[in-house]
Amino acid sequence: MTLMTRRALISRGALAGGAAATGGMLLSGCDRLAENEQFRQILFSGEKINYHLQRLVVDRNALAPEFRPDQMSPRFRTNGTANPGTPEYGRMVAENFANWRLKIGGLVTKPTELSLPQLRSIPARTQITRHDCVEGWSAIGKWHGPTLKSLLQLAGVKPEARYVLFTCADLYGGKPYYETIDMTDALHPQTILAWAMNDRVLDVGHGAPVRLRVERQLGYKHAKYVMAIDAVPSLSGIGLGKGGYWEDRIDYDWFAGI
Ligand SMILES: Nc1nc2c(c(=O)[nH]1)N[C@H]1C(S)=C(S)[C@@H](COP(=O)(O)O)O[C@H]1N2
Ligand SMILES: [Mo]
Image (cartoon, rainbow, N blue to C red):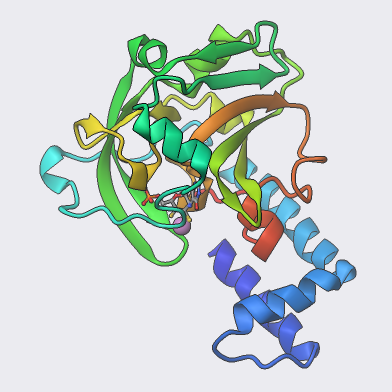
């Protein structure tokens, strides 16, 4: 719904700007629109209103549907980065992530680093959920890992924290992929750092060694290859300030609630 509305707005804006409204419009139109700061502001303020409206009418703590094992998709495709491909990541894979550490920092009283065995020893949740990508595909998979809430508590998240930032191992234009979620989603019982998928250790394609599952949000919010988790007071100063790689880049909604 929201995305369609915003796409409709985007295409109208592109037409007004004289851009061709066909085929590659979305990207080329958006690049042009990104230069039109006033138009960006209008879109962004609309998104803020939409976010607050959704918060009023939607129970943000409601659970996403969970499925039975026989409903799992026989194939779960990968999307976006399927291998970060950097020398650093290549080394981590070769070492079976023995020297990988998950850094939990920002607005916390005890900045924490967890090895993979440590992360795997934390009580975990298992959930079979549907992943919905904004590009129009869905898949049902089984995910297993500790809740983000338990990790934030471990590090002593401070009350001033309003968002959680995920920094990933894969680079886009030389910089790590990043995403943010608010505290409602961060503390949601189905928001987990998954280290296993479909009863196997998470593979490289789906974000090894850990990836976020934030089940009330669209696919691009589910950061793969998570290296660092930071509790932050606001979104300003992160990337271009809209809270995520795609949000900054092609105006995807920051709030991608489903
Ligand atoms: N680090 C990172 N996380 C990412 C992406 C990415 O490119 N890099 N793509 C996102 C998108 S658009 C989707 S739909 C899902 C795809 O997850 P999958 O590859 O496990 O299907 O990961 C999301 N998380
Ligand atoms: Mo996606």
